[in-house]
Length: 484
Image (cartoon, rainbow, N blue to C red):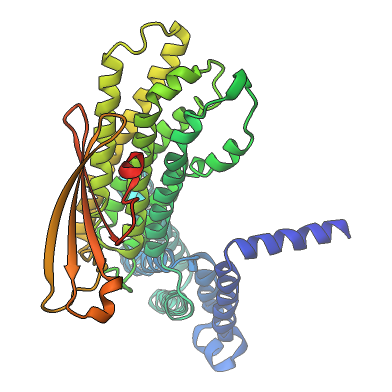
């Protein structure tokens, strides 16, 4: 009884994890019930006989979870059966011309040659990726037709029946797969990449705060929540095989939704490879959160601001790329976050060059510099990922991102531009450009909006531009102005 309950719990878990699996199971049962009618319905059985079993076998081996996998297997099986059937008839005809004595010898030679050559070709990487199944079916069908044709007088009729039943079974699988709750491999690949972007962004958005967390009174307590928060990225490390199989299946699929027939699935693999490289750096960086060698609170306070900005801006760039991929729009807003992350990296480099770490212990220095080096490497990889995503967006003809209007423009409105410079306590200079839209309608004068552009200039010459629309009276325009 306990075993039954365990099986039921496992079944519920599998179904809850992906409800499409339940639908796929019903679809397989439906197709098998349909092709089984070749045995149950006497007129159909009289036409095909025992060869009707080939339709059932075709459904069992061809029907896969996604449309691309089913279509690829179905086309491979039909093409291989047609080709092998034609060659099998030709081989039987040539062998029969040599007489009763030479016929079995020639047939054995033909079977040996085609099986050996086909098996060797299966080792070719490109062939194995897309046509391995068709070569397997080719070997099987050729051998069966050649060998059985030696004892069968009507070899042409035998071949015709087998090819017909294979085509019927394959078409049944393809039709049900496409028109009954289809599962598209291309859509799954697209969603997988967007999810991987999001998982990396979760880590980077919080890493700076976690790493620079100041522990009072040297209390080295463990923060158990860290592992729970940062474990999501680990699934990205082993996503290569899944991405490659989905891309291979997606190439067989017809155009559907926003995905054209010749969608650039190969570019998805290029983006996915860069994402995995970034995930490996993040995996190494994660080890420094609970490293045995602790960085002193004093150093954390001195380097905390640029470290937080580097991690935060990289995480924002990843998050924006995830959203852009989901919506299939060009990732225009991610460029600003990448530039801000690089600018923070330069600020941190200037701090390190100023000799701030002269009195740091060697082991502490090695741990700190390694973490910083990994974070800088992640920023560089984020820039490469963004470039690769731009290439994908261009090849796939993603739409331009439609920016929502920050405030409504009224006709005949006048603009008044004012400029204010504010010097922060950390010697940053912030220039605020305000553009007030004056509305002639006095009844709505109290609710007018203001567009604010902030130019933040650091001591090292780097400038960061932020734009935001706030209502009049707001003093907190963006993070930079919080120090006013």
